[in-house]
Amino acid sequence: MSMTQHAEPAVTTPPASGPNKTDGRTSQRPLALRLLARPEVGVFLGAAAVYVFFLIAAPPVRDGSSMSTILYQSSTIGIMALPVALLMIGGEFDLSAGVAVLTSALTASMLSYQLTMNVWVGVIAALVVSLAVGFFNGWMVVKTGLPSFLVTLGTFLILQGANLAVTKLVTTNVATDDISDMAGFDQAKKIFASSFDIGGVQVKITVFYWLVFAAIATWVLLRTKYGNWIFAVGGNKDSSRAVGVPVTFTKISLFMLVGFGAWFVGMHQLFTFNTVQSGEGVGQELIYIAAAVIGGCLLTGGYGSAIGPVFGAFMFGMVNQGIVFAGWNPDWFKAFLGVMLLGAVLINLWVRQSATRR
Image 1: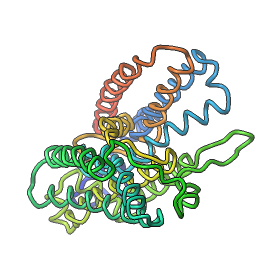
Image 2: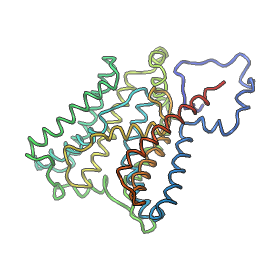
Image 3: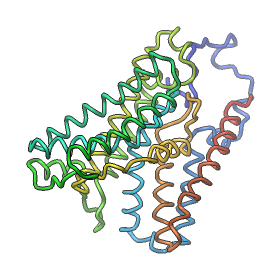
Image 4: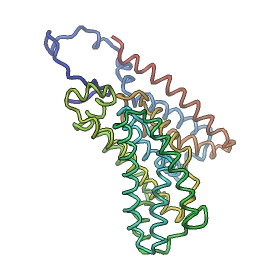
């Protein structure tokens, strides 16, 4: 049995009238409303509109290499927006996601360089650190009952300060040293930061990972017991616990999933630029959350999809690069994002009301 996008955690019983009898109201709803009730449909239409707009306003967008750049920009946002969206469906969100990406990259870079070790040692150590940060956030939220806003805001400040302070202490600089000549770098770069050719156009490997992760997340949400747990704890954790849903495991694992995403994007940044600036990453968490919200996820939890944030991230990449290709002042980028976010919130509100209308 397939799961709806807005799952109720409580166990329901079949109506007394039998499965073949309805009151006629659902079947009478127009097809358009039934489609719009899905959280990803609204953002798909919005992404298509933005794409067509920039096709007209910025002719360079029509070039294959330009679209490759747009998809790359979208993928670096989208890879992190996916676990952030799953966490939001589960009823929580993570303000430390942006600086956690940088923490992961700094850990791998400094550990490898300062100890003159194979870069894969740093990569594995960074994964452990990222998962530990996610576990800490999840454990604090579950065990203390504090809002995830407060817990992850604290983690955000801790990581932001530690990123800068530890980097200066270890390297006497605000950036890490170049690791491009170290053992294992070339192999790691092929996995995290390489490109491949499609029709004469170079496409970053992050685009491939982005789409694969989105497909896996969609399958998990719609076809697995764990996906049901995510929707259930986001809808009502107390009712979910009453019917046997492992709330503690689900929430902590979702925070650790955000940690995994931060590690992956951090490794991409490290092996793309060979070095890391310790003051970066601040503000990116808002981009990830905004991409998930634009993609149809609700801050209140229990509603959303994995496909929606894909289109949300594409809209960000499209606007970011489209403004450049159109020759406009890039200072307008944040204004565009604000308009898109407010529009998405209003559309999501209307869609939710339409989906629950009786």
